[in-house]
Amino acid sequence: MLNPKPDLTGSARININGNTGWLLGANLPWIVCGGDFGGNKWGVYGIGSPNPPPLPPHSPLSRDALRPTLQAMQGAGVNVARWFLFFDGRAGIVYDRNSGSPTALDGAVFVDIDEAVAIASSYSIKIIFVLISFEWMFNKLQADDITGGRSEILRDPAKQDALISNVFVPVFERYADNDSVLAYDIANEPEWGLTDANLPAPGQIKNRTFDPVPLDKFTLFATKVAAAAQQHAPGQYVTLGSARAKWVGIWQNVGLDFYQFHYYPQTENPKTLLQVLPDLPPGLNRPIWLGEFPANVAGDPDYMQKTLEAAYNAGLQGGTKVAGAAPWSMRDVGDGFGPANTDVLRNFVAAH
Image 1: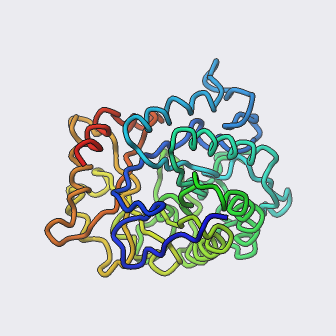
Image 2: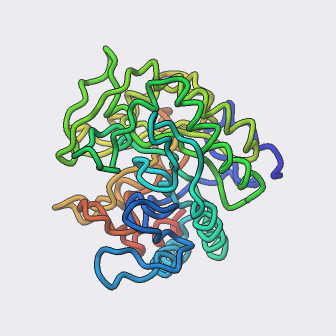
């Protein structure tokens, strides 16, 4: 097993094997959305599978699509890939047919993760695995829909425990001594699907509605996931991808090793990145990482370069220091934000 990770209390940087440099990462974020790890009713076509994804037609094997992306990251000086593992729960997890409770990983998950970490290691890329995303809380489109529809697992403490012990813990234990796995991100932007007096009512994202989960229920879940990761993967960090700087304080007491927030101009308009940093809670005693920001913004060809510089230089005048940043995304996933320009990343690394 890896040596226990350094305690980041009081640090402004994330320590990786003694290196406390500015952590430049990138959101991969997937080869096939929700299908990189494990099988589902549409097939088995993850990173370790000999089967290509069914769509689009004539797609390469997922592993063959992965390699050039990681090679480009390595060539640009990017250290870390943020990669979505179970996403909305559509693949890799076996559920009880009656209760819907998670009972096990499917037989393809470890084949896929093994291949993923081996390929990442060959390019000297470390991985932050994002366990689930807010899409987990989407309402189903119809009765047999496998995308979303799993909020009850997050509301029910017994089902929370089943997800953690039957799905997450086996992953934590298997890769506890794998140096290519840097951290586990409990959830991507969960606030969009949570209810609380201090959060906006869940709306629609991607034309999908939410089956909301109370914040206190999700906080309990996040606390239990963090504790399980700390116990079963003591050499890897634990974080959570908060959707906005102003919500980071929600997660201060769940057991994270470093904090994380995301920044999108359309969400924070008219605030710039530097103008949202004061929204972070005062007195953060652990590193804060910018886990997402758009690699491309329409009408601003220099956006990524300017944002990286702003994040890197934050704190020079006594404000909040940012431990690193990761553009969304290395690959074009159809949302208009990717792909990241590797020349910009390479030039940034050369300058710093």
